[in-house]
Length: 529
Image (tube, rainbow, N blue to C red; front, top):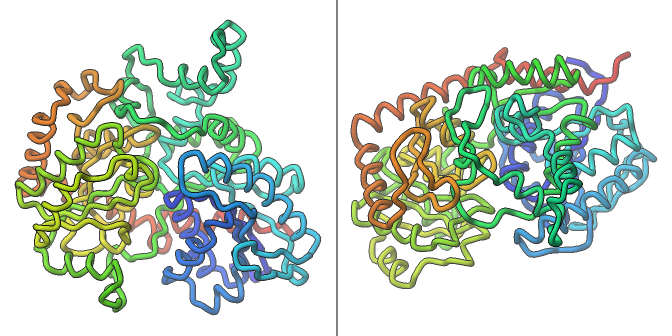
């Protein structure tokens, strides 16, 4: 371990599933490298989350946070959480992070716009490595323009397979040529009738002739199954295209919370394309989470009125491996078909399946539960609980948690693996359908609901069967999953997800592949003498 003082920087984005893995890496690096100082940039509205997440990590003591971590909020705007706010935050970060970075290089003083605290960089080493979220790519571009010598690391929270899907060449099933293809389509008349660049790009991305979607891991999906829900997508086409440029042009490497033992074929393809061809490094560091999957500490005592008290009281009253956690994440929610959530919860009530329903998604406000269903849940406190927000890692680590119904985003997918919990997938778009298919079909370690499909993916699935799509068909599928969870199928899938979990535990152990990747990342950011 080098004793040379080091200064790394991380730039977050206001998405929990993006910031958590990045901050987990930060906390682990701080624990293992006492010579390392971290500056963390966050939007003004996100500083509280960053501080809370670092504070709950067992890797970082209050002294370390005070002495070796500087969390700096940038921007003055405070947009309310919404899909439209993503663009505003993107612009704010692109504008203000590089300016603050210039002040750091000049050994000046930077003021956090959230706390008004001033940070003096007079005695802090010059930064040598900059970790930049995939949704802040123009920040990375500007940092490289200011400091060509700095090691820029593209932070990508999903899987290796998703990285190849987002940025890879067409022969690997990737969308790396999406921007060029959109421009070519517009030149050939696709923009006629006033179509915007984003609309043309979307049309290229959502036209589905019914072909198999190629991917290195051999996940069997038709192209239309990549869009199984007809919900509006976040307005982030330009961000995604710039993200591709950061990953394959501006960055010196990429970091992901996966491991090679989980995706061996995808890792091999990434090595051949990203490293051998593009000459860039990648670091598969595994999910670095705050709550231990092997010896989770009990939740700290909370006041009776604290909202989490109800959650843990409920969990403590249930049988082992019996409770289903339902959470659609921050952005996605089936708000265009609110009857589906009603059918789901009513069926769980009818089957007396204990569940916790989180309504933290932005989309919930557009389609809240009916008063009738809320009353039915309130009348069943022994089997049902609604929560505005759930401490997901602590809940997944609880012995009474048996399954999680999830949209299949990267954060939730890696968390159910880390804690050995069977997933029930309800994917919407992006990387979610591949996560669902891989764990369900390839690894036989999860379930996926197909009767909930309403978008292009409602066509016949590759795995067979048909999507009827009625409330009755959906209720029947949920009842079957509940029955399977309690029987031999559930036992088999639980055994398989625990086998995957063990691969991750081995990778994160001292000398494991994820542990070595973290050490390699620090070495990569250490100036050569």
